[in-house]
Amino acid sequence: MANVLKIISALLSYPTSELIDAGPLLHAALKADRMTGKMQKARLGALIDDLAGQDVYDAQERYVLLFDRTRSLSLHLFEHVHGESRDRGQAMVDLGNMYEAQGFEVEAKELPDYIPLFLEFLSTQSASEIHSLLGQTLHILSAIRQRLQKRKSIYAVAFTALESIAGAKPDTEAVAAILKNPEDDPNDLQALDKIWEDQAVTFGGGTGNESCGPDRLRMQIRAARRPAPQSEIQGEPRDG
Image (cartoon, rainbow, N blue to C red; front, side, top):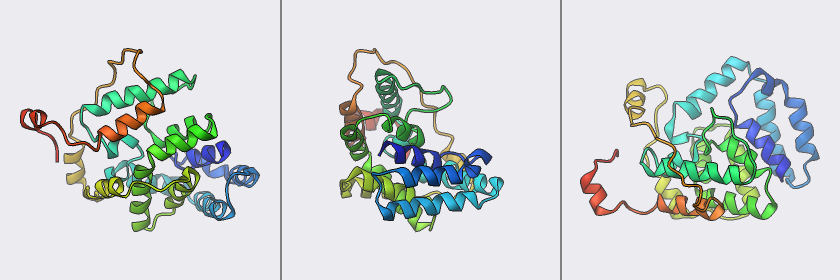
């Protein structure tokens, strides 16, 4: 299970010539994995072959159009539940604290909720913790998978595999709530500029004494589903 999570983490990372050239190594690692079924192996193998057959610049352009210029397909977990609200900063800190508590080092350039990084962390955890943490984020992963399938993107197979590994069904209401948000057109640069004019997220402020384990992640995900207090709605304009 840990092995396949590392493979999916690599496949969802920004394509480089090293990743494209690593096709044979990824196939070998996938074949050696004993926790992944034949169907999921075939699907992930198709994604490996797809990347291996791409020109690196074409692969990078496709990736950017999908995941960087399409906010509704963001590979940052909290983007889908917190957006640019002030809760996102604390959620990010809590997730980073969970990594630190487990001795998992994060490069400064990566945000803690970046899905490839999250999967890399999961690959270091026990099977029960993998199922728990994937289960808590399953509605997000499922929503991204459905949007990728709608675009007929090969990347959808990576999220199908994650849903299979989780071994659970996503909360249909939570998935529907995410899918209600409008999808972005990566070619509408004016609309994209307006979207990304949101205020920057500020990280920090953790005391170090707060819970930073799986339960904290669950609370952060659940908190995003609750409506804001009426005083906050009236006192502070929020982006739609």
